[in-house]
Length: 241
Image (cartoon, rainbow, N blue to C red):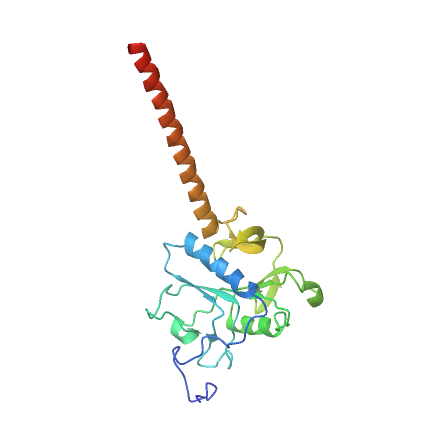
């Protein structure tokens, strides 16, 4: 077995495990970051300088920052290629292979089993230089004595809680916050991206539904126009006889 902690060994991203293979406590830990990723792929479809990872290991191969990988529920990096090492894509996120660009935003969805989101992981993300740290804790926030949704910004090496919602992040050019909606047939509270005016960006499902409604409206309008034209022709024909 390879010893990833051996000081003389620097494995490539293909040799590093992409996750820790620990099963999530609930499906929201995958659904929520994947929804954010899908919306981002829609609103930034023409940009190729970003990458959004879901349940993917972040590694510092030099171990100058930390010796062990950390695996957030989701993270956003800007200034890195959106696609890499095709056709496989990224198997993990190795800082040394990303020009030492750390994620700009990290998301943790707190599970039933507390995972150190407010202490150990917060310290680790600060060490990595993650600018924004988002913690979503809709079910167990009272247990943890926190709010259901918290966003922190790294300032002078420490995370400071950001006030308001959605929270605008100028370095990213997006806001993040909660909202009611339907995703995969599940109506509940989700996390969404927002513009600077606080308007929520639509999900791919909503865009498809809007397109379907427009198509139906256009079909009905054509049908009405054809009926009116038919009546006109019938009426004109009667008068010309």
